Length: 243
Image 1 (cartoon, rainbow, N blue to C red):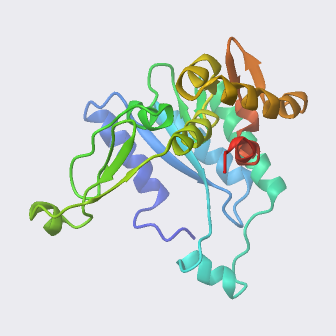
Image 2 (cartoon, helix red, strand yellow):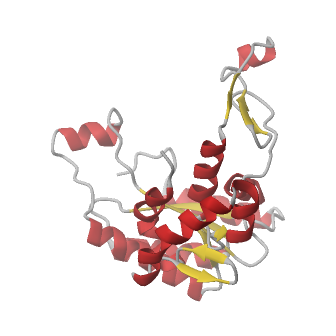
């Protein structure tokens, strides 16, 4: 169905082999929202990952893009994306299964046992500077984003990559977008310090109706989407953007 180069059995065996080799921090990707599969196969996959003892799980809803094998199948009517109700049921099944097993649902698509959050990706979500080394790698210094040429040959030949300078509005929109995708949410004091008290007031005004609807919560100086509502995060986040 997924046309992967490996089977599910091979993927699980790779996890077990890595554990036997001495690795103490294992992560696995899980795809849900697959047409024709449903909750029982997903439940079995979750049980297998828990049995394998992984420390981190990234769970992604299948997206059908035009021009891909799935997109072509959808265009000719051979594949139909799952409906919203099914997506919600599967998302909640993943959330409830993993959190009951001791995982933190710390970002829309990511779950970790305490102490095993992805440090690399967390730097992106918090807006911290990072350095990318190698072909197609990206770097960010807090104001300018740069990227290396994508080809190995071009990178080794010293070709120039690209760059873009983010405006204050860009940085604000990115901070709001990435912060609200995490369990910690927006640090309101940090937002005011970085982007000014006028933006803090704007965020508070925008947040009021979402707080009343239970889609946002304010606690200890932070504004966050409850993890069990992460699936609607895009619908909430877009209302905070400056255009």
